[in-house]
Structures are given as C-alpha cells and as structure tokens.
Length: 267
Image 1 (cartoon, rainbow, N blue to C red):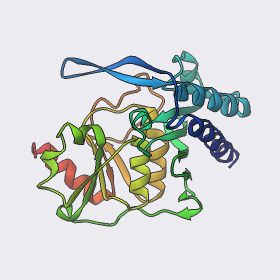
Image 2 (cartoon, helix red, strand yellow):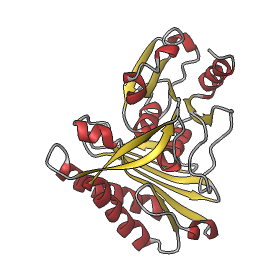
Image 3 (cartoon, one colour):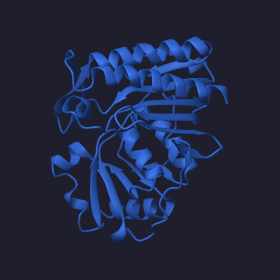
C-alpha cells in the first residue's frame, strides 16, 4: 500500500530530525491545552515538535494532496470534513519525556477513511522501533509480526499506565487489581508496547486526542487487540471534537471487558 510506505518514510525522516534535537539545546514553548479538575494545564512544545510537523506535512501532503490533514501542531480546517481520507498526526507524542531525556516519545501517523484507521505508523526515534500496520494486513515492528497478549486473568495482568498519572499516584487504585504497573510516556508508544505483548492492558484515566490514538489503535487492532472509551464504545476518527471525552482502555478483548466492568463498579 503506497500510503503505508510513504508514512513509514515520513516517520523515519521526521525521526532523524528529532534525534538531532534530542538531549541538545532547543527552544521550548508552553501552550494552554486542557482543564483537569478546574485547573488549566499547560503542555510543553519544542522546536522539534514544530520541525517534525513541517517535515511530515511536506512529505505526506506532497504525496497525497487530495487527503485532508489533522495534526496537534497545525490549525484545524473545515477541509477535513469534506474529504474521505484524513492524515491524523502527532509529530512528537511524548514531548515531556523528550524534554526529560526519557526514550519514550514517538512520531504517530494515522490515515483514517470515513472515520476508520486504515494505515498506522508509530516510530520511536530514540530506540529506532518502527511499528506499522495497514487494515487487514497485520501489525509489525521492525519487520517482526506482532501479537498482543492473550492473558485473561486481570490479577495477573501487567498494566501499562501514563507516566504522569503514575507520578501523581493516580494509578494506586489499580494496584490491588493487577500484577504490575508499568509507567510509560507517549500514548502511541504504549499502544505499540501492547501490540508487542510487553504489557497486557493500558488504561488512560484522562481523555486523549485523535492524534494520540489513531495510528496505535490500528497497530493494536491488527495485533489482535481492542481499544474502547470508558463507555465501552469504539473510537471514531476525524470528528469535530477531537478528544475522546473520557479515558480509554486497550488490550485484548477479555481483559478490556473485565477492566471496564470494574470501572463501572467504581473499582
């Protein structure tokens, strides 16, 4: 599939650029992004985010000018609601980890058709892990086919969690339910880790955006996993409201349903 090959090329090109900034001097900005319990949170933005976005846009839109564009670092446009296919991109997912020198940040490139992901590429330029999938053709990392965990017992599950949620002790509620909690940065990378069976379940307790999930969602799905919001609904893409509106759960279907049940019971 030509779109997949171009997306892989774009991710690696942006990754080379990001590596040139990693653990070196660069300018950092801050942007208002969301509210959490009435508190306005600000997220960091670096030169690497912006330069990566420029690179991805040049390659992807250059190859497919007829497709629409949705990126965390580009002003949104009504154009995307009038196109069948939309690139959904996070040019640097895990900016906080990037700034801290933690190798858990990625470039995330998804292509959605009528709201459904059909191409997904996630690249970690620090570890050089390249995850990819196209709908119906399986998921891979550096050429190796992926299969998510088949663990069915919640109490034996390894839970992958947001590093920031873990540091704020928001994951303590899950400790009695699972065997281990693995903190990590980058939502897209966590979905890749699930597809590799490096964890069994991922829970984000706060809403995420389409660009955090689109590519990793397809990769996990093609590895045999599922991703739902806290209401048990599948995520649709290229919507007017780009946030999920609630937290998300991901993993194999059995564990996701078990954790969803526990959440509905208030844990």
